[in-house]
Length: 317
Length: 272
Image 1 (cartoon, rainbow over the protein chains, first blue to last red):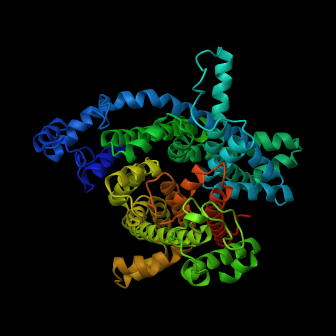
Image 2: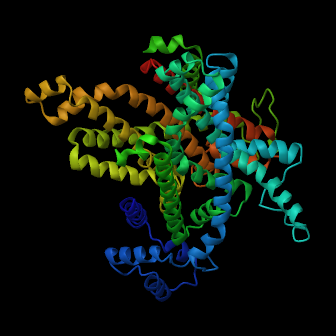
């Protein structure tokens, strides 16, 4: 885990510093006010005159103390401050999305597997394949067209209303947030729902064909018990790993729906930073999301160990 | 394999669709000789009609012609990006699987590290340093999507290399490179094909998302993704600008996904 973390940090640093191009050019190129002397000072300030390994060590030390340097943008705020205020929003939306994905995809997948081969199963399969192939930003556009423009019942951007938000009661505020979050959450979840439902279905179909299910049925156990106590448990086990693996995709999706719906989260920050070539912010974001992913994988590993009795008792036999 | 592919009805249609798409991307300009670049100020935002089957955009350009041009871009991106990721993935995976031991461990670790990055963040970070252009997009997508193939090939090679035919080839003094290329990889072609067709769909999705975010293919070159930028701006007045390019992406990716599903079914009779 620590080794992977170090590797991730090193790859990020390497990518950014070995890439061709002058990191100061977006700041200086079109700015006539910046004289060569000022440029020298900038280079000194960002430590760009030091040899690569020295910069690497300095940067690594910075990362550990959450010091990612100062943003290139006009406000020149510390990068970590910028990220800190946006992180909770992204984490909130992604955790909500994860819960929704699980709540919907597992029952749908099980239903599809139990009715494997029927018309309903095929319908669900078509839906999941569509969800799998749908470009999320286009889905967002369609939603905006339908709910935002045609029906006019949902706001199409931001986290909460800009006018009159302060005067709302707590309850109204929650409702306002919820209304703003419906479309982003739909966009964030539909791909995951499709993917996981499909996965649960295939895994369940396979488990339902195994001998111990035949045995459980032969014992005369009620079908509900066979499905939920015996089959589902075994079918869901690999799901934990899949969830861990799908973390990067989920977090990556933040860039798209946050940019489209104007949600001030880390994804939008990344997008804006790339457009304005704010390199310290880009690098910090890259590190941050990969660490989040790493954490997700770590939690998945723990979850797997807790859920699988073979691993849980492994040490004691 | 082709026979089995045809026996699946849906998959057959997907295959047909992709072939038509491919041909229209190649010969579209001859079959439908309307310029995707020509600006007509008096024809702004016309809804679909006989003259302009899919309508016109903000600058009066024909949407169908632009979608056809976009097909060329998307196919180009998917072929080059997947080609690159296959070359990387297959060679790295084969080396890891064949040599095993420390080499394998190191490579696996590196793959794990790369898998920690959400692809889109990784691509965005690299693109920020390069100019956003078609060539760069293709290369960056290729360079950031080889890990899956590498794992696949590694597993395949690992399971095959202890088999008798490899042993006997080795006893005959066949070189390692030749064993990998002639004896091991041909056995892994099927799963590679599955992941290649999935990868092509993935590349098209990523390219269009990047172009939509303004970091991919730059206007005036039309791509399905950057056409949708205009779609977003004219959401209230011109539904055709949002609908058709998105539909093109959806259908193409769906066709590729269905084909990879079909290939998987054919290769793995256990799955239904």
